[in-house]
Length: 85
Image 1 (cartoon, helix red, strand yellow):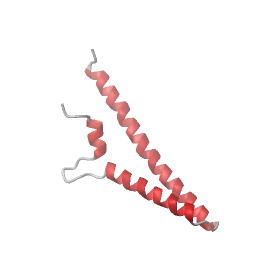
Image 2 (cartoon, rainbow, N blue to C red):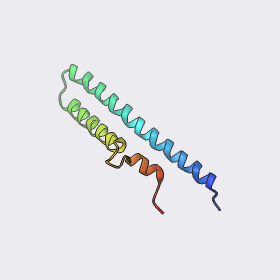
Image 3 (spheres, rainbow, N blue to C red):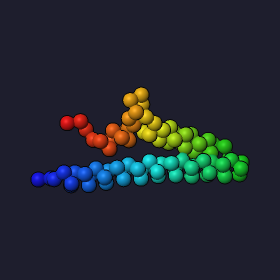
């Protein structure tokens, strides 16, 4: 039988994993922008545009997960809360 403390520990681990995933997504977007600027200065066009597009999609996804709606809840908060029982 699982006690309430064990459930809280599992929720904490899931919260940390989601925080880590969102942080890594932001770091990857920053790295993609930096790489795109570097390649643009070298004269390339196709790969930097694709890299900037991917970085933009990643940032929009991050905004969707963290921006609160009209009730003040976020997707991140809903994921941490778990399913309604």
